[in-house]
Length: 504
Image (cartoon, rainbow, N blue to C red; front, side, top):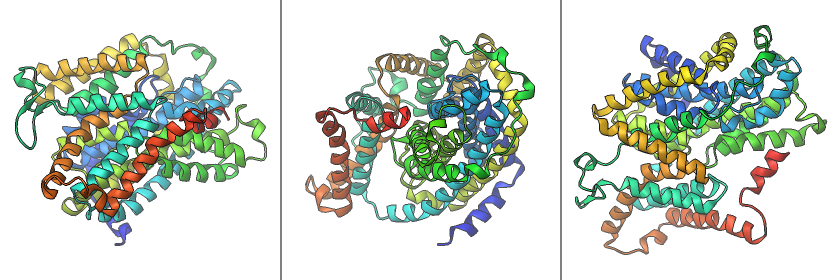
């Protein structure tokens, strides 16, 4: 199937006033959220989820995606100007972006960040469009047995590679499974873990948990952080980006985008690891590696290109397999479910026009991002001057209204606040929240597929190893789980590769 005519039709469908305005709104909100230290793509998408879903259809997904890739760039603003990463994937941008800003080259650094984000987004979009249909077509052959194996493999990746301690990752995953089981049994019908509460019979709405666990937790955490140090050093005249240095950095841009795509498409690894690997590779390729960390544009080109490319790559497993590969795509999955759409291979069959219109809005949003960032960078920098005591109450009021509007019940607000408190506990104890969230989303799906497999096979467990695809995925799962154990036995940390890339 030739996907590019479908993409062209999708772009034409996305050029409607409602979708264009939704995309523009999402990109602007994403830039604003990304520029605020402590908040990031997952928090931004979670906070705006109820508002975006109210737009309905293609505009809702266009808005959520705009917030996603808009905040990916917005995080570079604080990284460059203050040396404070707006989100984890922006950590590597600090390495050379902040030294350039201190040397009076903030505009040059921001300009390269804009261009790298565009190139990375363009290559990520090409990969998204090219590989989505083949993967979705192959996934149509998956039955409940293969889907069980695929989910187990994805969850093992997230749990093992999603944090510093794999054991804590599996504990968080187990908690997510338990929360996902609250309510009516989807197959047999008995009530589970409701503690006598009628409000919990239908289970816990994931979107409410996501808003609390990512949005509110991020805000509460950042309240104790001092993010105003050094603001007086910058004049607004130095904050206007100057698009240059692209020719001498083209290898770093391409390498970063390709690295970001292939790393970002793997569930559980995400943009943070992609930026670290892209920065390390750029340094190894350079003829002057000693200059990295002192303030050079190549040190911004590689991680920023990888950052945006990975953001689009992480949508491939979401749309084609119904498996979110990161916290942000997990929240986007909640948006799809709230719109009455089930992500997975059948989405391309039953809602092809919707999917290609959404993909078309991504291309439009990527172009919007370039022009808006060139125009709005000074305003984004001005956000750093706003006290959180003024800004966060406004954001919290918007969040509270959005959560209440989901089902017009105070139960949702209570669950969101409990999730926020639990998120703070997770951060304090160094437990990764992503496995918990994916356990909450995929746990019920995994349970249904396991029980359907058992019904079809009449309780014969050998069905999981008789099917070649399922067997291969289970073998990969065992290897993923065994990898950190082997590394520990050899006296190395499971994430030594990432730490080595970061230190380099």
